[in-house]
Image (tube, rainbow, N blue to C red; front, side, top):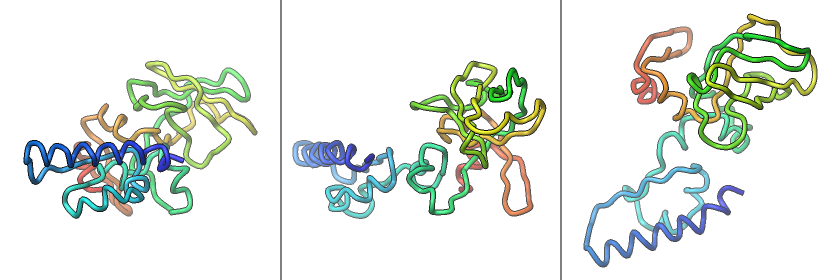
Length: 185
């Protein structure tokens, strides 16, 4: 669906690029797109521009977050980043809040800002500065104080909030800047 919606925009982009080349004579310009790796690959007009002219932004091709999860669910990708948090409150059996909000997780884009690793039954529905509130569709909410791992909807919007992150490779954990973490991926 995303590919179909983006194709007309990619076509217009290529036409604009060619017009600039013809009218201004600007050679060697690069087009960087985002919005979905698969969508960009399926655009024949972009492919015809040749190697080195069109590149897909790294966050759309190698950084796996909740926004790309449905497209590549069967590919076995590991999320590019997780946000560790604890259940801060549990006002009912099917509602709970974690101790992270818009100050700690990117809120750009539509829909839930995060999902919980290993659970399709817990849906985020409200985000404040300090808390993210989940509704449990089936089963009971996790216990207060329990550790939860969130998959951000937007890896870029989330890592931009932090100066440092933990980089996990195998059993090794190291501290690095978020820019180092992104380069490592």
